[in-house]
Image 1 (cartoon, rainbow, N blue to C red):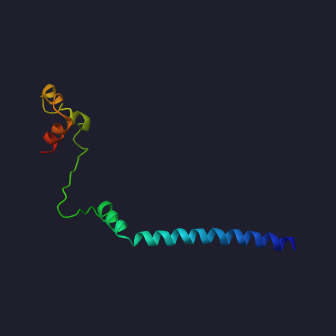
Image 2: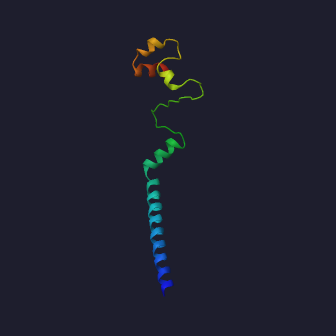
Image 3: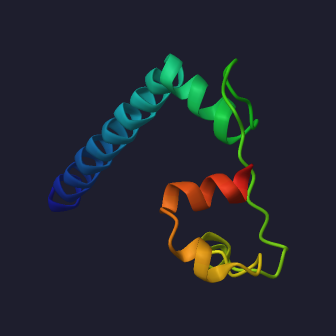
Length: 95
């Protein structure tokens, strides 16, 4: 009788655990059916963009740190570039 009771308690705990997992899976399925998930997947996994958006690619293979590029140490006019605003430095790097 004690073994049966212990088995029943164990099975009740297992049922509760499986119900929790089921709810999590159902929530995941529901989220994956939303437009937010589709957009996130398209942007991050498929590298797609919306019409009218611009893509900026920063290469890490240049051997020059991004910080040095921003403060203008790569173009020889570092004193002049250090007086520029950060926004203007980004513009000169990107365009």
